Amino acid sequence: MNREQISMIAHTDHPIKSPLDDDSVRQLLERGLPRGDERVLDLGCGGGEWLLRALATRPHLHAEGVDVSEDALAQARRAAGDLGVQERLVLHHRKAEDFASPQSFDLVLSVGATHAFGGLLPTLAAARKHLAPGGRVLIGEGFWDRAPSREAVEMLGDFTDLATTMDRVVADGWTPVHGHVSTRRELDDYEWACWGSLASWALDHEADPDSAYVLATATTRRSEWLRVYRDTWGFLSLVLRRTPDFP
Ligand SMILES: C[S@@+](CC[C@H](N)C(=O)[O-])C[C@H]1O[C@@H](n2cnc3c(N)ncnc32)[C@H](O)[C@@H]1O
Image 1 (cartoon, rainbow, N blue to C red):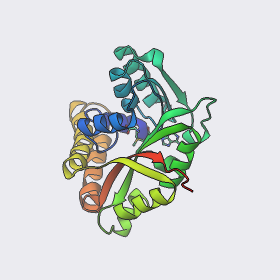
Image 2 (tube, rainbow, N blue to C red):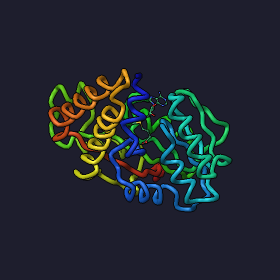
Image 3 (tube, helix red, strand yellow):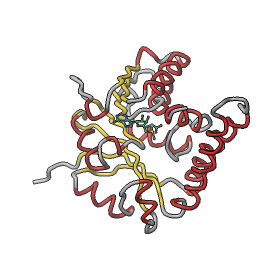
């Protein structure tokens, strides 16, 4: 079983692949899509859950998603068909950093995928290239809520604290117009859902040759979360607009 298949099972009960609950996702989309007829691009869309929710509630919206995972895009395509929104969704199997489009977008989304661009600011630079005048960016990124251990940095990456993260975004020419810091409950619910789904799959497929490996993965990942980063890692989602060049 490869990483993508493991990820697919882990997200069975939490299709948004980030520590955000349904209300937070809805609110962030509302702030990012004030009109309802926008063109939206998701860089690192995974199974397309953000785009599907946006399309299902906004009949005049058009969306495009980019991801390197064929399996995740196939899942997005199937779900779009089930929801009847497939004619307003275009999916690109490509590296997000290589994606180019002749059209610009009113909202560029990238949640939990900044590693694809090498961090927060490079992701914002990439998003900016796709942004229509007056457009918005909806970005989701980790931060350190407390000083991390070296092991946590090695495992999750090199983030900064919340205030420094905001300072960097503002210094880069962006104005936050909405923000959400994932609650303890959202963070915990996400991890319990992922490792619980994996463990359940292993118990439900005891005869499968991958069962023991999947259960061991669930146990290891849950332990890493509890021992290495639960007390220090946080998740921030922002809706951003470009700051004007005031004279
Ligand atoms: C944590 S998931 C987030 C998915 C989605 N944004 C969400 O919040 O549900 C990260 C996604 O980034 C994708 N990804 C990783 N590197 C990528 C790259 N270079 N270009 C495009 N997608 C990439 C992965 O395949 C995965 O679907």
